[in-house]
Image (spheres, rainbow, N blue to C red):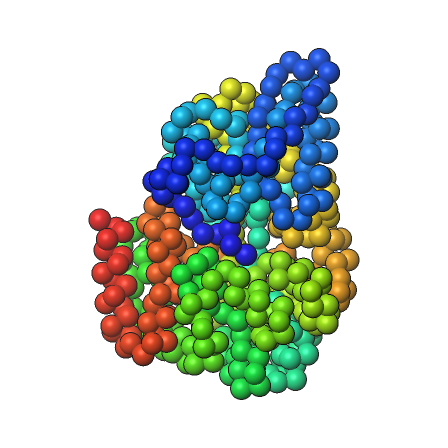
Length: 447
């Protein structure tokens, strides 16, 4: 999974003034009274694009709108390049997908969608605090949370290896049905450490990276949150010098011993390869590695189970990648754009697209975490049942660097400060040296 890396507007503009995209899909509607041009992520599960086209066609026919769809690949930061080019030129699509802190980056150029959010939450319940943190800027929602492109990078483990070598029964902790939270009470970072040691000694090290790309940022950020070790607080104050940070670094020093030899050079494909090749007992990722294993290593896929991350002293956190639909304030048809965005995020449409995508995308509203697709996908049956966060998981969504102010958090994320600190621990630096390095880096972000 590699779409959670952030490209700033400055970097994107340096890459070019326009993005290369797949051919446009033009939906012609008889008697159309208006026109709309929208951009979507070019989904890696092909049927998902077909489902999106079908839904846009239905909406266009009903509302007499001529719609042009542009499916934009995420490879080469093409979506981010498109955002930057259109923001500079003040023309382009009526709405685009925005990830994580990108809503904050372009907040002044995005049309408020408070009315749409009010309608959605009135019908389906509240969005998470992280959604509000990323999209509600200066008192206004600047983009609508989207299911397409929202992912949970929680644990994907080998059922047999974890049970045989570590005594961890993931099926008992997280069965493919509603369960008592006490069943997973023992799934803590202490248990995780013991399991990592046991699996490493058996030749199946956990495929967790301390590299510089998104997956490493995500799978380390949740440990900081679980230990309550903030680098910068919500006020923008540097808080890296704390008892919680020292506790976290002491833990990381032990964990790093049991990670793969190349952990500090991990990229976003390394964990996928480790699982698919049969070399790892556990990674943290959306169901993409498991999906590829179904094709390339079916015996591995049949032994995989997706489940929440461990709990620490401050709780259980799962790493998320967030997607939003943002409507440009300079768009030519803002009303229609907002209406289409809302239509696409209503339960019937979200469920239909998620079924087409084999459950890969996650609804941003927990009230939609009951779709049948997560019970049906196999092998083994129920393997991704716990991919959406269930109420009984007793877990929290997380994005690395929260709760720092978004403009600071985005820099921390892009510079991979969290895994870099642990990589320095892995290399033998003391807690004091690592904290001093981080403090120096952070001072450059908060000035």
